[in-house]
Every structure is written in structure tokens, then in C-alpha cells.
Amino acid sequence: VVASAESNESKESISSKSATALVLTTGFATLFLENNPRIMNQVRLLMNLKLGNNKGYKMNVLSLFDGMSCCHLALDKVGIEVDNYYASEIDKYAITITNKNYPSTIQMGDVAQWRDWDIDWSSIDLVTGGFPCQAWSVAGKQLGDKDERGKLFWTMLDIMKNVLWHNPQAKFLMENVKMKQEFEQYITYHTEQALGKVNKILINSSLVSAQNRQRYYWTNIDGIEQPDDKGLTIKNIR
Image (cartoon, rainbow, N blue to C red; front, side, top):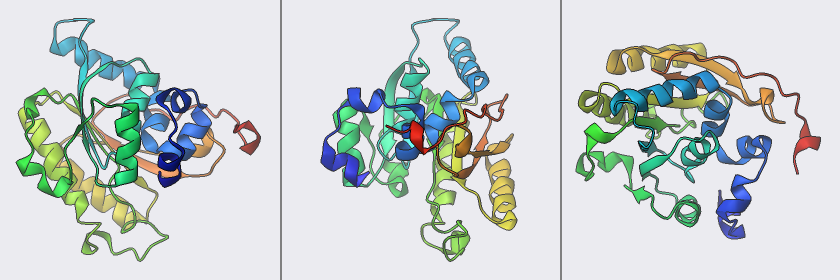
């Protein structure tokens, strides 16, 4: 993110990158949304149900731990129009990229202050969160929610629960690293308790990129499938 901010890449240059490079540089949203067409059909169905098949409807999105708004980029790439995009992010470099590419983004600030946000919760159609991985990853100390960063999992659940309370038709999408089974089961169980139905899937980015990166996804969107293996290698990145 820092390197991208310093290079001042334009929206056009970022959008023209291959799916491979996007997965490598911009996180989970492009991988998950762009490579699961059945999921995007579910999202389109949601929009149609909300406003009686009004094809002009634009989605309202709340992106937690937004990074540089890769969820917005992913929605762009699959043809889903966005009306209001609310982003919760505190990294100044990531916010710089977002503001350059999507200047209409509504920056909400720290997720910990969500109860003070001025937002129409009932208007949110999709809420996403790639919550901090350091506390859950096998590469870290594996303290889970005993780590301050790990506690943000609960903050995210509270926000998503609030969205669903105001709009039961809203969809949620969570992401994190492959972790030990105890942690995965813990997150899945508490997500089900807070949000109801949960579909969980483990997808390796190697199917659609030149890197080996396994990630868990939790969502109430149906029709999740493994993306086709595109057979990409480092030679495909340019």
C-alpha cells in the first residue's frame, strides 16, 4: 500500500492491471468477487429484490478495514454500480490511494468509533471486512482475541450485526488467513451466533494468481464455488 501511494498510480492504471496483479497487490475482494460469478448473481438479485427490478439501482457498501478500497475496485470489475461507499480505514497511505481513485468515498475513520458514525444503517446492501490477521495467523504469536488486534473481530461482528438488524436482506463478506483449526472453528461459531447463516470456504489465490495464499471467507451469500485454476505463474505478471 505504501509503495502504491508513493507511486501515485491513477485509477486507470490500477484498473487495467491483470487479475493476477490485483490479487497480489490489492487483497481479497477482487479474488472473491470477480472469480465467483454465481455470487455476483446473488448480489444482483439482492438489488433487484430491493427496488423491484430497477436496473438503475446502485449498491450501498460499507467496507471495514478498507485498505485502498479494493472492494470498490472488485465491484467495478464485475459491473456492479456503487452509490454510497463507506470506508473505515486509518492508514494514511491507503486512504490517499482511495481518495485519488474514488474521491466520492465516504471515510468513516476508526472502526472502534462505529457507534458515532453518521450513516443510514438500513441503506447498507453489502458490508465487508478483511479483519486484521496478525493475531490469528500461524506466522504470528497466535493470541487470537487476547491480542488487541484480534479483538477487532468482535468489533466487526457488532457492526455487521447492526447492519443486518436494520436491513435483514444485507449481505456480509469476511476474510482472513488460513489459521489453526481451533481459531477457524471459533470464528465460524461466533459468526454464526452473531449473524445467523454462514457459508465458509477456503480459497487459494494460486488458482487465479501467481502466488500461494490460502484465505478463509465467511459470508451469507449462497453459491460459493472454487474458482477455476487459471494456471498463472510469475511470468504472467507484467
